Image (cartoon, rainbow, N blue to C red):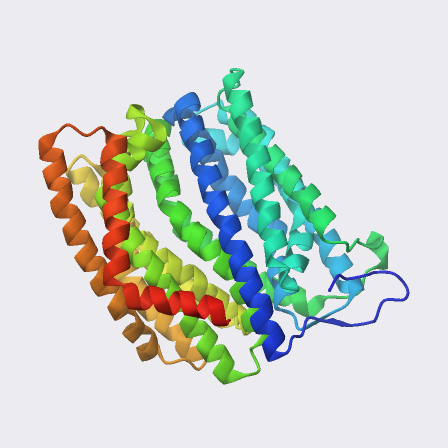
Length: 502
């Protein structure tokens, strides 16, 4: 349902669906988004592996230092207004226009702020070359703002496949441009090129797929309630940013760009399967749960089904990546990145926690519970940052500070934060945490069996010493997938049946 700002358009535009229509839209969106996300994962790994070989760990570390500031300020660019667009039941064309121009104003302000903070960032990390990099990346906030409202409208109306393929298209075009720049000798600036080209392509694709166009800046309508909701979502996002970036800021400040290059890319590789799983689910969950929010039983079934899918995928991915981390980093980035394999193994446990935590935030937002979300994220952020600090101190004592940070992050997230955080969220929306925990059993047992079998076989292959890293990784992955599909066949059948019956 495109939003048409013409004079003949209705005053209110409601994204409402019948039960059958909702199931049909979710089913189509799930399939198309899953395919697009799989393609995105392949593209990102190919591009990342190529750039890791051409650019080098120290340059990745320098860009990670800038991104630690830029990603924080980009939260201001969105201000949670794209989430408010999806969550809101009724929305007028004038309100959408107001939000678009607010995005553009915030994007411009963020770009100016980023440029102004460049000297302070360079002084904080002790690397003068960060000034030029920060100035170069500052304008990306404006480009990002161009696509936010159009992508949100696609997702609001459950045109999820279009939104997903727009992201993939931007990723492919940006990746090709970055590799071309790196081959031409651009070095670290190829990563800057990637940012601009990817987000410009996303904006062009989103505008071509979503026919809505903004009114003049002065012709909008008040959207105070949405701005308040989005502001609380943005505050939660700032805290989530601190939770996911405090480790990188600490390592960059204390250990320098080379150590940060290894750590940041190990973290990024760990997060790729999380994004492969959560990105399509979020794009489906937020509009679907928002539409089902007034039918409690439908809402409960959807929540538990989504969380069950997360368990089915995240358990084996977490354990599998821990077992194959060394050869995975070697295959992706080459021998110079093998040292990051230990960090990736330590971080891999976080896949489980990250997946559930990210989707839990979506459950809060679908019911408009931005204030409870903010309070829950405050408590979680304090716990994880404390865990990172303790890990750094202990790791430094054993002369492995980066590894200590990785372990502190993972153990705090999975052992202290995960179950209380998700349980509080589920209770707040009328879903039993016990029902969720019972769903974890089958996937956990199948993963345990898979992990033991793969570990035993891996020890044998390593002792033979004849397999190159790519061969060892391929054998481990094939064995792990086959064993898990057998041990978790009941859960896999359920998942396939749900996709068929949605």
